[in-house]
Image (tube, rainbow, N blue to C red; front, side):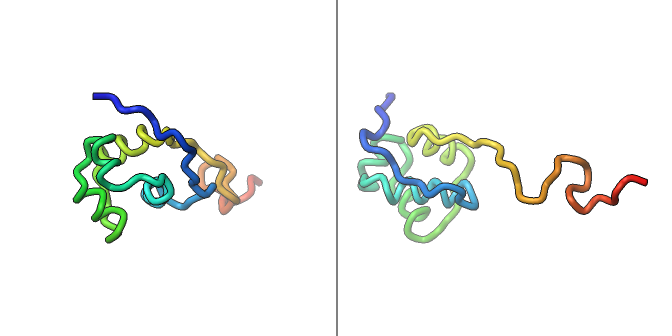
Length: 95
């Protein structure tokens, strides 16, 4: 069963450090109860509760479900000081 995306926007602070932090923030800021989110995503309420309230980690399938539901995707970002060459910024200069 497919459920529609949340009607309001979910405030996720930009540049969060991890996927789990971003997902936790999306859940917390969605305005949805864990029961509503369970119904919408088919993720058991207990799993959601342990994730949000106790900081437990999620498995890959559950991460995918939440990310899809909230319309979140992974995108590469330029890391400060990275040049893209092997060894990054600490690589010795060519002679």
